[in-house]
Amino acid sequence: MSVLMLLLPESPMIWIFIVAVIFLLFGGSKLPQLAKALGQSKKAFKEGIAEGDDDDRLNKPAKDASTLSAVDDEQLFEEARRRARLRVGEGKDD
Image 1 (spheres, rainbow, N blue to C red):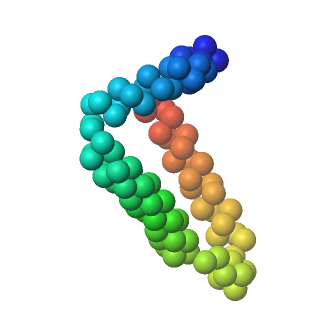
Image 2: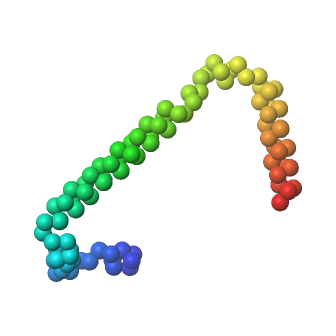
Image 3: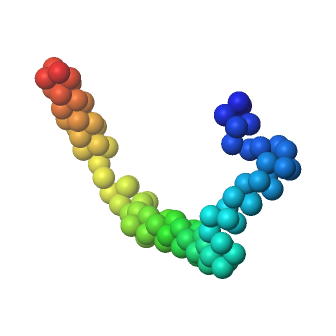
C-alpha cells in the first residue's frame, strides 16, 4: 500500500509540479504529438489482443460428440495406462 501512495501523489500542488516539468521537458508543440502517439499505441495494443483472441478461438479444435463417441472406452483406458507408465518412468530418471 505504501508503494501505491508513493506513485500516486495526493496533493494538487505535486500534480501541478509534475505537469509543469513534463511541459518544460517536452515543450508545448510536442505534447499533442505525444498524446496522439500514446492513444494510437493503446488502440493498436487492444487490437492486437483482440486479434490474438480471435486466432485462439479459430485454432481450437472443435470437440465433436460423434468423434468422442467413436473412441472405444478400452482404447482410452489403455492410453491412460500407457501415459501413467511414461510418467512413472520419467519420475525415476530424476
